[in-house]
Length: 269
Image (cartoon, rainbow, N blue to C red; front, side):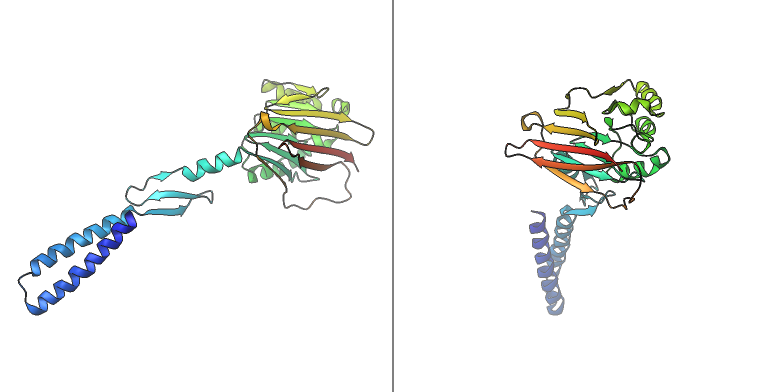
């Protein structure tokens, strides 16, 4: 409608301008009529122009719709992006300044698998910032190694973590155990071992140990979540080779029923 108004206005601007010039040349008595018509056509054209929506890039790189007449921005595109994000299970292998750790984004709920060395907490937080993570619901420690536990207490404090769990009993023998326990207690939670399958926001989590390492299995039933897609992304970083510490491998799949499965295995170099 706005574009049609603009086109009509421009057409009449050209018409009255042409007729006005001819009236001046011929010294016609209708010159006042053409001047008034020209002014009205200019006004119509201007109204049509300011009513056309303008799209400008927002601060986060997304496009915000802005109305030229009022300057009022709408959040329509942001709402659409938020709705889509809530339906995607994201599994990310992120940089922790050493061998990497796993971030699972189940809609709006975030779970961190292992942390990293204590001195590398800034690298982890930088990686979390890249994924726009402001809060982490749960952290799971797979084994009692400094490369999995060192930064956990700081992450729990900084991201207001509510739930903390571990898989292997070796975690209790690490000096960072008490720090993690104190941090999660301060947030009103407990640091518990995964003995049996537990559920969190529609996700069934199972942990197991063996001589070769530990395994975590996340099962999301279609009828218990809003998820409709799954992605796996490894962030761009140089993983250190031939270093001591816990290594991770990730296997993701989706069956024909639309159920999602994520299996995380750890082993020590």
